[in-house]
Image 1 (spheres, helix red, strand yellow):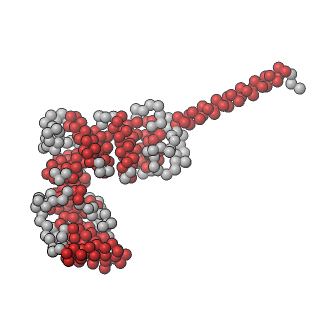
Image 2 (image 1 turned 60 degrees about the vertical axis):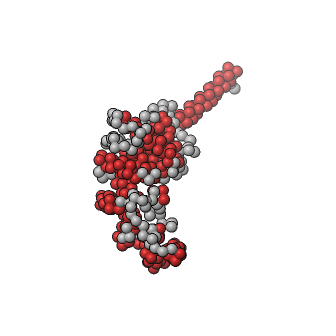
Image 3 (image 1 turned 90 degrees about the vertical axis):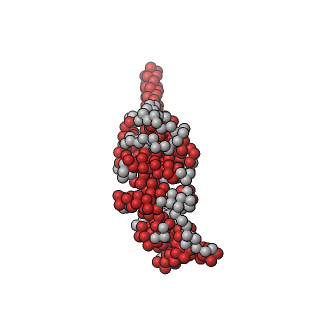
Amino acid sequence: MLTKNQQNTKKSLVVAITVLFIVGCSSTDDAAQQNNVNFDHELYDGKPTLGLSNDFPPETAQEAIARGDKAYREKDTDLALYEYIRALSFPSQDQADQAFYKIGYIHQQRGNYELAKLAYNRASFINKNNTQYAAAVGIVELKLGEHENAKMHLLHSIKMDQKRQGNKNWDPDKDILSRDLVIDSASPISAYIGLGIIADLDAQHKHAQQIYLTALKVNSKSYKALTNLGYSYYLDGNLPQAEAVNRKATTLYPSAKRGWSNLGLIYIKDRRYEDALDALSNVMPREKALNDIGYFSMLEGDYEASVLYLEKAINTSPTFYAKAQKNLKRAKKLQISAPPVKLSNNANNTQTQATVYSITDTRH
């Protein structure tokens, strides 16, 4: 039987062990909380994160970003997002702008433009003097159709870039698209191309072309600059130049869609329908190419060709019947109610980019 002193000692020992256990659990929980993130996070949209990474938690934001970069290179974008968001959980936020930018980039690639805009905006807010961050915000706003906001952010990026280069001749308040614009290899090319797209949307095709040509002086093989320049020439009614530029794009990038789609539009506009069929067959099944030629030639007023190519689409693929049949009924109705109209290719008969359908969208 224990003495009173022995009983008191035993009680003290039990209390001490209990306290140590509680403190130990608390410390472990604190560490877990510090190194992990609640992944009901507004910027995470990947697969469930349970078991996503079996590694020990990163000890620093730099380590988390490095892990994210590794995962991205290995094409595991869910894990990359997970790591970049974990980088935001550390008290030190000196890497936060990089993490937000990388998060935005992944969302932009996935077509999640609202999430990309949110992440890019946070990166730009942290580092207001980063031209790439401002450009990224403007590009996703352009994707979202927010043209005025996009123009503001793209111009902010370009102003910073012109200042960096010491260009004192360019005055954005007088002429934002002047020939005095200077671009070098360190410039945010996407900002300039985005501004060119806005100019095309406003039917300022000559200004847009000047921007694209300036960008091509830095990189003569820029796919985005080439295809946007070719499309701008198309909108401007300059079909020979449009064809030449897009031919170059398809030669350099034969597996990319935009150059072939642009060529298809150019040939339809020029009523070179078999050439259009050859071009479009590079990016879509033949029956869809026939349907698109029929549809766009109908928009151009060539109802005879429209009926011919829509009937070919129906005969080529019975499974494509419903879509082409709907377009065929419309073309025949227009053919009866209105005479064929040959549209000229001069500058007085142009379409803005906002009114032209995407030829790769075959819902029509």
